[in-house]
Length: 199
Image (cartoon, rainbow, N blue to C red; front, side, top):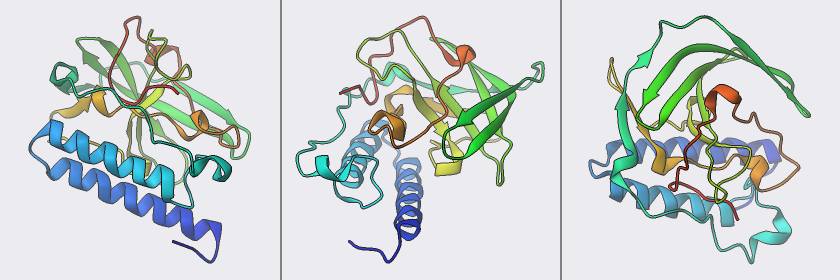
């Protein structure tokens, strides 16, 4: 597919990612949803003009390595909003300072993760995670990023937090991208052998 301008390609990428997560939320079988997520992401990464995979590598890029689905890493958790307010600013090489505010904590069996609110235009919930595994991206991965539609769903009380859907930020593919990485409060001492892996 071709687009008249790079901005239009990025807009289409985001539209397709939103549609992907809508399909994932509609699928009652988490393992089937995961298989669809992996196949669609690989199609976007290898073929879409706005892919973070550098153009010169796309024709030989085999797709993102993703671990087999493990249901024990899927949780439904309440966001604990009884937390002390805290701000975090990420210095981006392309967009300047990106401000976040902590709005809650997810208490998961694998550890606690802060939930951040993007204070820039439009806002959005953001939950990155960094783990102790040598097989995952060292800067951490993303679990929830509602700005990009990466949201597995919730009811008024609980969020679906499925670590099998953890994915690498764009900067894992190319140094041309700058991404907010997991702060210390989103770093776990355990290994998370699921989701997108490094390599």
